[in-house]
Length: 474
Image (tube, rainbow, N blue to C red; front, top):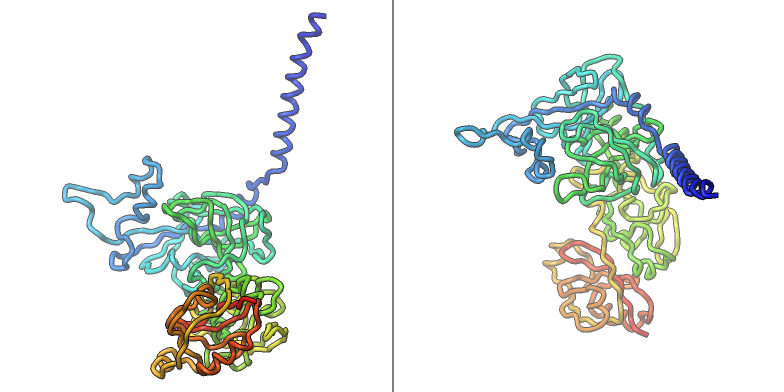
């Protein structure tokens, strides 16, 4: 009996260990294996080294900023810091910078980021077999931060291209690149989000991932588990210069459209509507009769633009473009930009509470017009009852801001306008979709405005139009 009592604890321990081992084995089976993907894809991933002159404005001594250097382990840091001698720090001169890229055709076309080769006097592409090939720039597109390079060669290894539109949030992805100059480094993570809009980036719906991306990864490919390239690693969010868990990649669908245009015609042309848009807040959605905030609110239509010719007006909300729903206003510019110039696009809009379809002949984006496609997202401006003083719009202000009609706000007291964010100096052009041309129009309109309802008001501030919401108390 004593012998049996000793065996029970031992047997229980063995059962526990077996269960633990089994659970670990099952977990291991469920984790992805990247070895085959890396073996097959690495030959087409390249290291890009550039020579940049001191006059280019980029740091002539080191390939990294001081913040980035401080993120490195001390063991590695001295390899990248500017050397010092008896005469002090080394004098500024040509330096080498680094990045990544990948080969997309057997005859030597290479895709990378524009910022990797910007200002470079010499570009060397190094393959995984240690071959070094001099590259020339075929063309660049700063709007998407893409560059197309060409090296001389035949039967070069190429990546397999996928479709970024088919990516799902939570899907495993793998990056191969040269962070800090360590060639063919492999990092993995998941897709954190899709369609991210970044400041001053109107034409790239970025893929956000938690894949470790660091200086030197720029321009390298992002793979799905099938070994297909779905993005180009481009940016990181960081306060220190190092990886912090938020990385952004250019969708390969966008990249290949740019590549084909540069290869075939030497430049990139983009579709253009010619509207200034803003986000639809919850209050704006209510004021325009939408069940939920979505779409792109047209704040201004540029004279002579495709939108003007098609009859779009300020106050219209673009709900769909070519059958695709617009959730956030930032989704519209990339969709328009991908449309072939001269083709007809179908828009579903809401005007005065009614949905209607409008056909627009897409124009070509003029130089410098990219930043005019979208305003800063409007902050929510919860309304309340009205309360302000206005006067006729001075002629010089009409000419300065190119404004037709409206009244100038001279004083904002307690109540509706103050809570809506209206300030002295603003111009009110319309309220509740009714145009205002004089103070008499304004005062007459106030008598008929519905109470307890959110009302859109179109104002102009410092020459930029936007909508705010007014709400009169019952």
